[in-house]
Image (cartoon, rainbow, N blue to C red; front, top):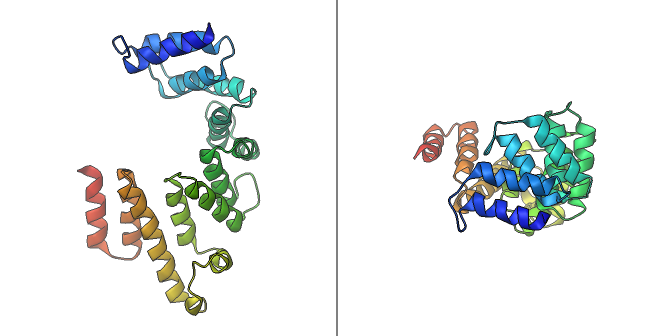
Length: 232
């Protein structure tokens, strides 16, 4: 039974009723995946992509993500989109990456919404649209996806084409819209607030974003303190 095989794989992965054995976990996940279980196919793809319990095999990872994506599994579409975006196990294809992120986002996958926002922000497989990027990041954030704040912070720092959205939703003080220095300072403060929210949520890696922002402001002592948080 493919569901039983997947559950047994989970037991071996997490040491539930047995010793942790990632090789056996992969064995049972793959038995399930080869019977068409899309969830197991995504898990097996992860194992092969990162060499968990096996020798890394990027092509196999791609194929398993592809099998599951064809069954409309949203997480598989996200992973397959990432493969196409970066050329992992396939030729790089930004148009296909955008299409897959869009399909997963339409299934309400929050990671897909953030990835789709990043595509709009940087013109990956689509025309650049900072406004659409902002809306997708903001939507993911409001639905509880904390890491969206990193992307949103970068969008504020880019200084591109979103000030009218800020005005519409009441974020941007109208008295600074004509003062470029004040506008830059306000955007940097917004970005810092967002990055610190991620840090305070327990994502230590976000200290890098904090440090990089301080460094760009030539606040080198503050930047050093932030970077030191990464190695403690």
